[in-house]
Length: 362
Image (cartoon, rainbow, N blue to C red; front, side, top):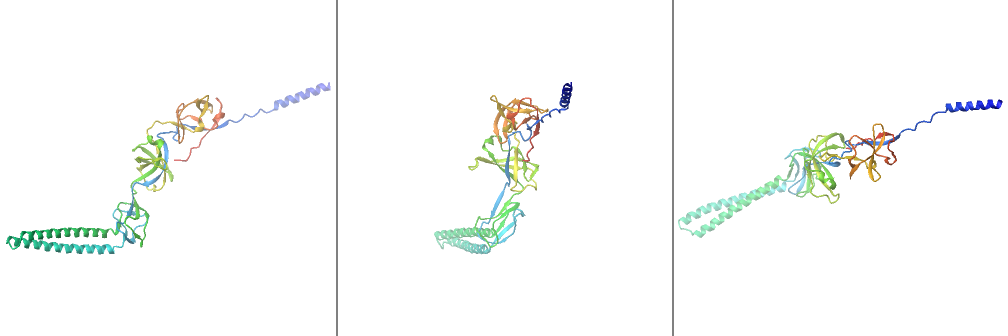
């Protein structure tokens, strides 16, 4: 009897323990790295972002047209100069002496010409009176022509000497800013040796190198957007101005110059700029290569719906680009796809989407 009572008590205790046992916790949803396709970062619209350098459209290496010793430098790096402004001077002593010699030669030639002209008038009167022969007059006329030629030669040489004297002062040939100085007072410079570099600040370009695979998508006159790394929040408007007809032997890329249409004081030469090509080519959705996998010989991606349910979808892919794989069909802009761990997903699986953070690139 006592044994039966004990068994009943143990059974009751076991039943109570079973009732108090907690339910197993629900496993958390698996996180999945996703991205929304069709955004500004995933569209391939002619279809690239290239990095280039801000450069002036015009830059001039100013040099003297005569050799000599620099006696004065009248400008500094960073100075804003106007066309015709004096930048440097060389010793003008020899040039001035040469000009004086040339002027003296002109005076001598003028005197010879005047004498020859007077003499020819006298010879003509003598010929009329039959005092001298015609041949003597012809000789005198030849001497007059020689004197006239000598005068013209002396005048030309005097003009050259005068120019040489003026060339001892180096003048700016355009409005701009001085970016480089390569000579100092006391230095002897040769003809054509760079002394000062002046760049035109009113017209600014961005120089980029375009891969040969993209040359069919860009044309002179195309509109582009430009952002500076120094100030990525501001966007400038640009237009393709020049494309070199031949690729660089070193990079196999084509140099292209884009004119900045609205450059301001924040734009400095030498800055790094990103050029966003907008173009008119049909837009294609771009996804990372990690988002595309193969299932039974078909290219597929995993689309995540609003409830976090993963669904496999067949897509048609295009060529690889610098930003990823082009999806030609099967996806619509605004849909969310998994971009990591796609080989472990199954149809109907619920995941916790974690959207890829946008890069801070241009």
